[in-house]
Length: 141
Image 1 (cartoon, rainbow, N blue to C red):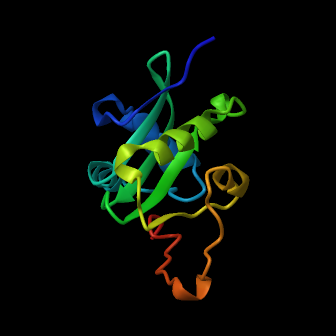
Image 2: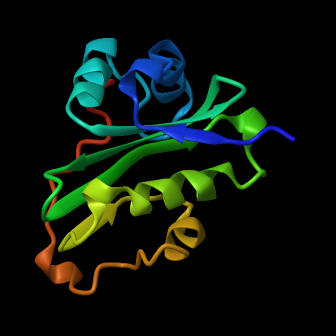
């Protein structure tokens, strides 16, 4: 059985694969320009998930590594789902040394609440204190 490897080495990332998935198959970033992804990767703590050296999953964390983090762009390729890889990926993220002792660690999810709940993520305790500027079609305009 092949073991899933998780790395934060940006040099290992298969950026064309990440771009193809996010810009064509995701529910949140369809139409994202490649330059936007490149800038996002450059300015984030990135996690790649690999089987036999081939990338099968990805996630980014936007953080100041002191007080706040936001987990985004989490995915496992469809052909590799159902093996617990997303759980291993999130496990590695929340265990990362740069993400300890944060006052707030956020994420947005449409359908994976059960996954993130295993790691202590809950609906906002005080949702009335949170605001956002949400532009879901920003890449389509």
